[in-house]
Amino acid sequence: MNFKYLLLFQLILLCVAHNQGKSVKLSKKQAHHKHHKSQKFLDSIMDVNEDSIELLLQKHENFYLAEMTVGTPEQKLTVLIDTGSPNLLLTSSLCQQNSCIQHGSYNPSLSTTSYYIEAIKLANGEVGNEIDIQFASGSVVGVFFEDRVCLNQYCVNNQFIVGIVEQSEDIFSQMKFDGILGLGRIKEAVVKNASYIHNLEYDTDTRNFSLYLSNRDDDDMSSELILGGISLHLIAPGEEFKFFDVTSDNLWTINIKAVFLGDQRIDDCNNCQGLIDSGTSFISFPVYAMEKFYQKFGVYQLCSNIDTFPDLTFVLDRGIKFTLAGSQYFKRNTHALFSKDICIPYIKNNPIIGDELIVLGQPFLIHHYVWFDEDQSKIGIVKSKQQSHQS
Image (tube, rainbow, N blue to C red):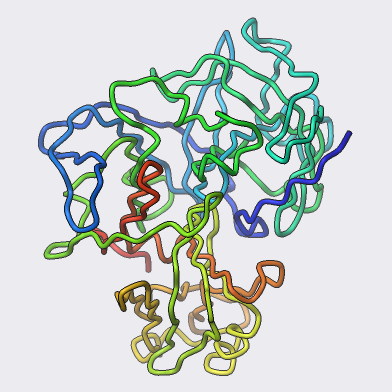
């Protein structure tokens, strides 16, 4: 049977890498990169914890990638790090479409530790043998496996895997990564205990993690996913974490009270939610907000005017504000029809998300270091320390 399982997920029709992600480093943090572990807090961070796990990510064409191994013997695959979904989703060798065979794929028949799950009770209570996952701009059909999965030496035996057997040709043929490592809230997973970081057995609580996205050039390895802690050296000088309640059991969402473009309010929110989504390359607004944005800017602007672009400000609980300058929510692009560079907004409308969901994708995350606390249902946000900016 097929069961529809709708995920508010990354906007998948985006520019993607033209080369495979190359490598991932996973190691204990060194003493000069001090980690702090989760506790019940709103305004403080607890003692140093040297047992946290650091994963360095490769930035490539606006995606943040890691290399993992699956099965016995190991099969190397490149995965997208995605806080908008909780599952491990891999292209499988069972998919023979052109959009599948262009990727690396998980071949369960080559793994002595692979186990095919014929039927399983899904999160919606139904029993099924496959699942149809709907994205904003395409879909995949997957079947279920368990196998050994590792990020470097950190492994989970019998990890639940959704193996793709069908996918949208026009969308996914462009994708150069082989799967998605979901870091979304555990309750949104296809089945209980499907999350890799939840299943990881280690001497720290890896369900809680922090994510830092670098704005450096492609192939840079300075972005960090830290399981079980944070690094103070990633925080901008003089800044402190502000903590917010997570408003959904299923997604990493927080309350957004208002959104301003300069001094003009562009939202019409009674109860807007902001989804923190590392798998999305844009900030996504409801259609009505984008109409106000385009009235101000149109589709593009000349980059020579970028210093005059108004700030984009998000007002969260307790009136706390986080602001992006014009240069932080526009992308410089050389166009063949123009003698000068044009700037295109990192902002899109998404009709399927409704009128009260705002997706805070990479343009927000690149400039803000975020702590995701599953245990306390909190998200911590602080201005991040960036060493250099994209031109």
